[in-house]
Every structure is written in structure tokens, then in C-alpha cells.
Length: 485
Image 1 (cartoon, rainbow, N blue to C red):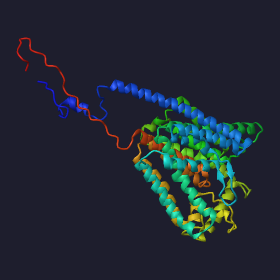
Image 2 (image 1 turned 30 degrees about the vertical axis):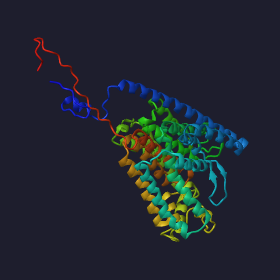
Image 3 (image 1 turned 45 degrees about the horizontal axis):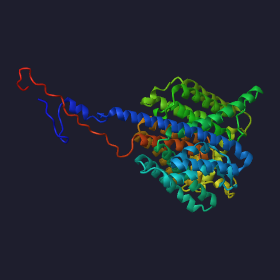
Image 4 (image 1 turned 90 degrees about the vertical axis):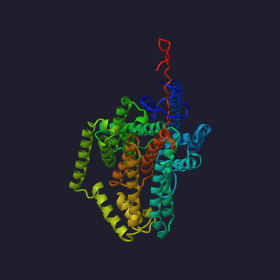
């Protein structure tokens, strides 16, 4: 016989077991569904407004700054700040995403203290997120920040041993490019703006790719196959064009479900970004995209369903890069990029031997104390000459730790893209300079967005409700008038 039980009393049987499963719906689930749909619609509308506003502000800045100077930038920047601060401090970080792609210099000298737009915006956004950002910091974010602190501790030795201005400035700058970038990306995504933030980054790099492709087509019409450099709205080196396009291309290929981009949009955008990358002829970018795409395609997760047919043209691009390098080796010109790099490798090794344990200081090539005045075009040699074996240890632990933490502690739909970002930058750094403002900060901002998106979907301390559904089946009297058994 079915009986009623007190609210605190549990039940046994199939009905109770089904009701106690995590995620079981309460009787008022239809009302909750309506509220959930309304909230999603509001978030989608807010995302559209933020993306449009951010892209308009960035495009206007790109046109106005070269014409009207910093006054126009100050007015537009203040307008964006007031708009964002009136709603949500995290919106500041979202609106800043296009500016994090800018390498335009605001000033600075030859001592390595020149400030780019990206650095200035990242510096401001770091303090906004540090004081006004969401709390508490998630365990994954704290692990990443501790890894950056370990790197800073290992490079502090070279700052103390080699006391000059550029050394101390770059030590703080490196922390901003790592910990600051991760915190800014995390703060924006933790508030629920991961889609808007990543969309602004992708659209900005897509605009850069369109300009690069247009210039490449014009050069090709004249029979010129040289690499592309941008001079409008500001100067941009081919390797910056290529690496920025590479980062966004990886995002489009991974297409994490929380990004909420449909396939019909991500596929053409991926090839557009690849076109900008190829137009720049940045070899490091091409190789890094191939490695990252292989990682995303082969990892055993929901992302593994991405088309692997794209690997065919990708490997073709790597073969083309290899043939181009081989052709330069066979040239009689001993001053081409390949031979120039070999000379730089040898000279950097000699610099490292002057202080093998702690190096000659960060940005030693700006001091004028050495005859060599170039930034080493290879990450390991750059770290050895700058911070020695101790600094290289911190560098390896930081980047290796980043990938290990995100691989093991984030679900694949969040962690795969984050690992691919770091891996792409590591690969790029083996073929060219590593510590280059935007090329370091932007992938780590995307890493922070991935972590923040996960934390937004899985807030700390969240518990599943355990709902007990009692057997309320009414007791029907027997036809004979006797009580039912």
C-alpha cells in the first residue's frame, strides 16, 4: 500500500533512485525552462551588442589614431570605459580584445621600454581585473598564476646580477604578458562573455587577414611573390600578421561548443585566416597551425569529430616551407634569412657562455654593452643568453606546466583549445623570437578565456539538487466496499 512520507524521509525503489540522480528536474521544471531560455536570449543579445560596439570602437581607433593622434584615442577610449563600467567591469576587458591585437607604438626609446597599444591596454585591464574582477579565483587559474610566479622567481636572478633599466622593465613586462594576460581573459569569460571576447579577437584578425590577402593579390598581379607587410592603419610585420591569423585559425578549427559559432561560419572563417597566414608567408605561423590542428583533430574527445581532411593541405604547406628552406640553403647568397639565423645562433651561444647560469640580462641587446645587438630568433637560445640555465628551467616549467594543468584539469571542450594555444606559441618560438608582446599575450588571453568559460559553466561550490519524489499514487477503494490491500 502506498503511503505518504515526511519531507525528510527517503524512499526506496525505482522511482526514488531515478529522482535522486544529479540533474533531476523538480515539478516546476517548465517554469525554470522559460527562465533559462529568457536568460540565454538576454545573454545572446548582450553578446551581439558587445561585439558590434567593440569592433566599431577598434575600427574607429585604427582610422582615427594615425590622423588625429592620441587625442582621438583618448576620447574613444574614455567613451568605451564609461559605457562598460556602467554595466559590468568585465565588459572593459571584452571591449579591449581588438586593441590587444595592435602592435602600434605609443612611444619609447631604444632601451626596450617602448610601449605598444597592446601593452598599454593589457596593463590597464590587468588592474581592472585584479581589483574589480570576479572572485574567487578558480583552482586552475591559481595553478597557472603560480607557474608564472615560478618563472619570475627564476629570472629574478639575472635582474639582480645585471642591473640595468631594460632588464628590470622586461622582467615586469614578462609577468604582464603571462599572468596579466591569463587573468584578463579569465575575468571576461568568468562573467559569461567568453563568446563575445573570442569573437572580437577572431573578427579583428580576420580584418587583418583581409588586408594582407588584398595586398598579396595586388603583388601577385604584378608578378611579385614576396611576403606581405601592412602599413595601414599601422605597420605590422609579416610574422605578426601570420601568428595572429594562426591563433584565430586554431580557434575556428577547434570550434569549442561554448563558443556557439555554427559550422557554416567557422569553416569559411578558418580558410580566410589561413589565407592571411599564407599571404604573410610566415613560416613559423604555418608550422604552428599544423601542429595545433593535429592536436585538436587527434585528441580523443568531442572535438575529434572535426574534419581531418584539412590535414592534407596543411601538410602540403609544411612541405612547401621545407622546400623553401632547402632552396635557401642551396643559394649562393650567404645573407638570406636561413644563413643569417645560423650566424645569430652562433653569436647568441657566445653571449650565453659569458654567464651560463644566469645569463646577460633580459633585453641585453639594447644595452650597448655587447657588440651583438639583435634579439635571438629562437626561444631556447633567447632564454639561455638572457637568464641562463636557471631562467631556461623556469621557462620550461612554466609552459610545460601550463599544458599539463590544462590537459589534466580541464575537460577537453575547454582544455584542448587552451593547450593548442600554448603549443602553437612554443612551436613558433623555435623558429623566431619568442618574447614579442602581442605574440605572447594574445594566446595566453585565449587560454584565460578557456579557463574562465569552464569556471562560468561550472562555478565553484555548485551542487546538484537531490530531489525526492514520493509515491503519491491515490488509493482506490475496492469495488466490494472493503479497503484495498
